[in-house]
Length: 387
Image (cartoon, rainbow, N blue to C red):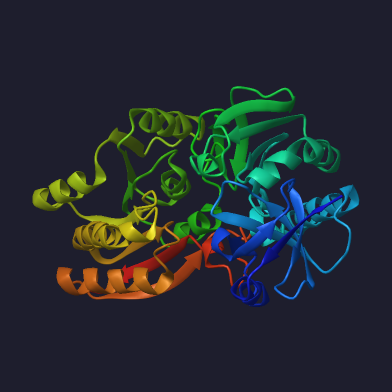
């Protein structure tokens, strides 16, 4: 029998406002035998729906349904199929993309990325982790995948009382997978690459940046060279920077794979290199800044904002008049308004007037659930330096 959890009036108000998370402080009592899926009752014992339950986590409940409809295998199959069908409807020009995006697909804490015929999965809560053995056969049936890999190595699993691990769950999982994003081909390492192997959420921003990029291009925090590879065909010269020697080797490999002789990659601390380039009088027509998340939590926001301002100020000074800055933040604790304010302050302090050409976000296969700010994490501004 499904266990029951009662929540406080504040918790019920949170659900009514559309947010699917209930924190431990708003849980009034829970059955001792609470399993992965529980019935959620309001303070007056009215059934509100069903949720994934996580005993050790501060996010104790993640709502999966409202009302009294049964949460059985048919329920989960329908949810998976809806997410997969939505991606098919997008007609993405890629063989690598996000198939399931957690809360935005009403499959909270479940991430599934598709790399050709391989699925890479992350279960980021205790409740979802218990359901993985049931979900994997469904995913294989619905997608025809030849292999499924669990990349359950994010640190957030430790907050759920779960181990960090990487393990095959089905079929054959190769060391590398060849995929394509638009005209760019990659060799992806699903076992060790960042996230699930590749940053998939910037695909459409890279397409947009390619419409403006020209001349001499600088790509900071390049990782696998996503922006650099996409922009190189329309540029005279592209320099890709990353602090990781492994990343630099990956960029060089991908550049050779795509026949891009005008792309060079080098190991450098981007903060230091931007200052060095400014002292040297270097100039670029296009600059891309796509750093890792500077703000992992709210306490780190002030330092993150200072970091974003520093790199964008330096980049604006390095741009030629009429040049473009493509600048990103993947810190969901830094919202669009905060990021926009930082860019304005960088413009003022660098004495560089700019216009906003485009404001963008994560790709369509990474949808945002309204009312859940945690799902809107990637901000991308395309700025033009005025003459």
